[in-house]
Image: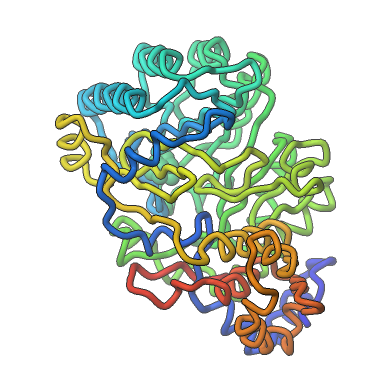
Amino acid sequence: MIKSALGMSTSEEISFSRDIDPKILNLLESQAPRYTSYPAANRFQELNHTVAESWLSTLPSDKSVGLYIHIPFCPKLCWYCGCHTKMTYRYEPIETYIDLLLEELRLLATHLLRRPKLHSLHFGGGSPTILKLKDLDRLFYAIHSTFDVLPTTEIALEIDPRAITKHEVGVYAALGFNRVSLGIQDFDEKVQKTVNRFQPFDLVSNCTSLLRESGISNISMDLIYGLPFQTSSSIKNTIEKLLYLEPNRIAYFSYAHLPHLKKHQRLIPENALPNTLEKTWFYLIIKNLLEKSGYKSIGIDHFAKEGDDLFLSLQNKTLRRNFMGYTPLPNDYILGVGMSSVSELGHGLAQNSIHFLNYKTKIQYHCLPASRGWRYHGDDHIRKAVINHLMCYFEVDLNEILTQQGYPLHYLDRELTHLKELETMGIVSVKNRKVQFQADLPMLVRSVAVIFDSYIHGEGKPHSKVA
Ligand code: SF4
């Protein structure tokens, strides 16, 4: 269907662009959720905080939970950024926010019937490394007061390598951080300057060494393809440098250009953005080079070394997808703390307010700051499981899921009829209600998942392109 990108030469790039099936190109240019949740976050509806509070009080006592803390501040804004964050020169708003986070943690504790064990604790953002160490310490004290942090708990931190000192790295290690992800995006100077994120290779390399010297050896690196001025050759150079740093995991995200939703993205010169075919070709280069260097491809945009938990979870079928991407950790129960963070609470999803005043007012009135979300109902659990299987394993046995959930085997036959066109295009095969994704372009699995999404045609913000 699509030419193999094994040699990755210029002539192959030309023939890839020339030979691609126009229907496949249409699919790559169409919009689809990335399915970090089901339903996708743009389908969430207004949710009263009392609903989230009642869900919290029914958390089963035998389950461990993941805790996510969102720090929505950055010292500088990257023009491509799609996160909920705000640039600040002053530290005062951050201090105020930490006070609110502490209060939110205290409120959470009042709704929990027991003291949960944490399987994971993740600080994300924004830039959590913007926090002064004394404030990180205050947060850790509050977390330890509310939850059981075990020797096995994964404690992860998203790091901006531009602002890290040896002392800070030492403190992170002493606090128990045992996994970090470094924001890199691209090593090409022109690309970096165009997206307002200049960070020389040596700076990242020094940061990586400091982390390893301090004992933090689980290192993930986050990159983006589809940025302005990227070329096949600049992508290859970036990967060469990336491989030198030997991260355990790599997330190579597709850039979502949505300037109508993210105003700062208007500062990105659109005429310097790669087109759909170029972007798709970049992905093939990335996959090819990383796989040749011993990394295993996971889902639509992650890579891991063979012995890494992420790859092992793919093999033993415990891989999950959540708001942070692919994870080997269970995500039945995730508590999101801080503005915009999402909690997964068994009965549904609850997202905290993304507006500071609203977030602050709710906490000041001693309410949890949930404002939007989704209460699972109807056949959501089946569709959620089907989509999770597709996004994680690129296959799904509908008979197995329908039987597990007590539904008749023909329940999704209408969706199988809708898959026929993708079958004709060679994107999937279907046999005995087992759907197998077959395309060489993993991102197309989003177009398969869409078929099982009941809410795809509802109102809401647009999704990013599949490519
Ligand atoms: S990409 Fe990361 S560092 Fe850059 S503005 Fe967004 S959250 Fe901040």
